[in-house]
Image (cartoon, rainbow, N blue to C red):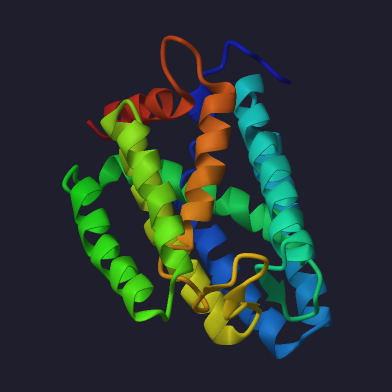
Amino acid sequence: MIDDKMPISDLLPSSRHLLFMAILLVTGLALDNLFPFMGQIFFSIIAWVSFLFFYEQIKNQKARFILMSCLVIATLGELFCSLVWGLYTYRLENIPHYVPVGHVFMFLFSLYLAPRLPNWIIYLVPVLVVPYVLAGYMIGFDEFGVILAAFLVACVINAPTTSEKKMYITTFMLSLCLEIYGTYLGNWAWLAEVPYWSLSNTSPPLASGAFYCVLDFLIIYTLSTKQQTPVEELNQYAVLNEA
């Protein structure tokens, strides 16, 4: 039964859920690589069943809307970036059905981990990323990285609270790990030159996580109120729950 009086903390996954999602992503991407067609179908089915099971456990309407917003925005983003823009391509030249659900899993990972990270991570990550992307632009091996890094910095600077800043940084780091793993396996690859812009690119770009940060931004500000954003509300619960 859906109940708006239930706390939005209903959205926060348990450590067991997160462990299952992590194992699913790692093994599922490997299956997609080992068994190009059937592996992708099997992984997609398991991913969607897992998502729907988690979704059904949530009783708060706002929390449900957050998940569905993430799913819809991620799907539209994938369709545009891969099939329209051609920025990267999946091995079978499609959008695997597990991809939108994978974005939801990454969003949940960030929600869980962000409040558990130290505040200094907000400064450390940009300090490490910015010199690299500047070097990539000047040397010429990753000109696109400067634009992506600018999105990351903009998200962090414009975030009104520390909790939201950590959310973007956490998303950036997690997504970079996912991108490195997925491109290493060969499940997808970024084009060496950005279509229409003629900018050099790497596979993956170091700052590719900026796309995931933009997804977080759209979700947060679609659902934010004058009082607080969903991230603030969830982080308050996470801190209290650990105390």
